Length: 130
Image 1 (spheres, rainbow, N blue to C red):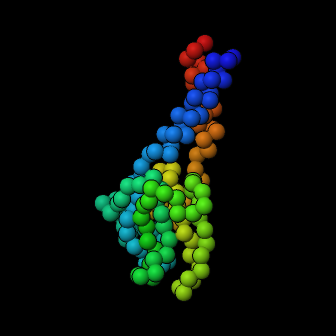
Image 2 (image 1 turned 180 degrees about the vertical axis):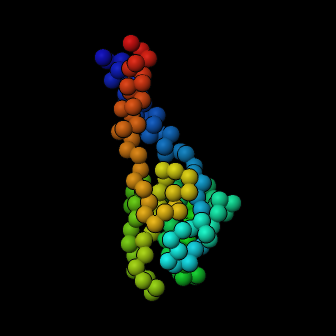
Image 3 (image 1 turned 45 degrees about the vertical axis):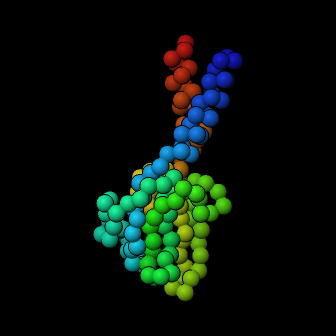
């Protein structure tokens, strides 16, 4: 049982470290406000790589800027949106880090909980070492 607990702790650190270091592809373009399907404006050849994809209002173009960064632009890591009010209306500043091109949707999907990943890995290792 002691080995199993050590393995679970090790797997937790390994999964957390891996998720933090992965760079993903993000759309890198400016879309007009109100576009519901970003693929009509941006395509996968217009991309950047970073730990986080971003999406938010662009004051210079009055559009929605899609891009990437290696540091979270808001208070904490993960997938999150924060509503801001500008001259052109109310917009969401969003960032995500779960899948390639996650800055394409109107609302970013929730991240995969690390706990579920850890439990899955633990079960697999437990079966291997029986």
